[in-house]
Image (cartoon, each protein chain N blue to C red):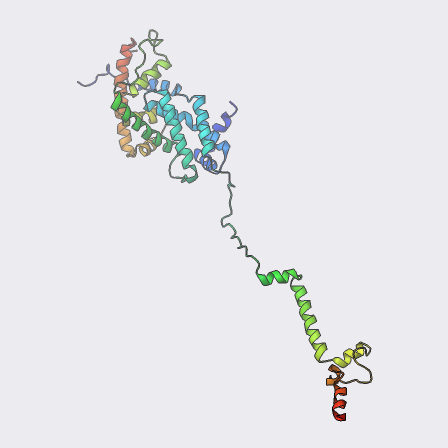
Length: 195
Length: 139
């Protein structure tokens, strides 16, 4: 894409947000292209793969970013960390409502997923991982997703969850252990035994 | 019962799942990108210069000119007013202090040469006054 260079330029998200707050339309386009995939990625992990709902959350989170831009206080938080926190809160609200209505709405990977005989290809693994993530407690899912899928650091996750870095490490470790157990079961269900 | 090694994936196997997840991240649709960009444009503040003066210059209050200022401006401003003042003073001086010199300048047109009085008599103002006096004497 022509815009790839711009989107991946060295200009920080914060500098772009300040430029947007000053009425820079190009900064708006760059922020949209740079941040939307991250926001959608995290919201989709949180909401168990419901794309439509994940996109609604992403749009709402970005809208809040546009609104706060003129009053953005520089140096206090990374833009992505701020966004992750907004997404976390929006998703937590939706999950709470969803559980009150339909407790079994968690997506499971399709039993007839292709490639089960020869081994799990990346798409299958990604689907199995997503399904396993939805079975984790919310805070473990947030910590593991941000750390291992979104590339956030422990201090950033601590800021998102408003807990200590030590608590983040503990959450991540427990989440990974739970994932390892769930995925081991899935591997057997899919007929893909140990290496 | 505690989990055994057979019940759980090791870190390497788990990392393979994370790698797969990172390789196939959920991608935003073009429709979502368009909606978010539309929101951005709708919420975007009006453009303003990035570099602004540290202390913007204070604007001088615009005062409406008063009546006197309007009159002065009407006759040509302060220079015209100074000329008028000079002419007024000169007129007063000519009228009360220098009638003889003025008559000389005027070539005797103002006062008769036979009567070079330096002041006005009553008869100068009321020419029939003398005749009236004679009439009284004659009875």
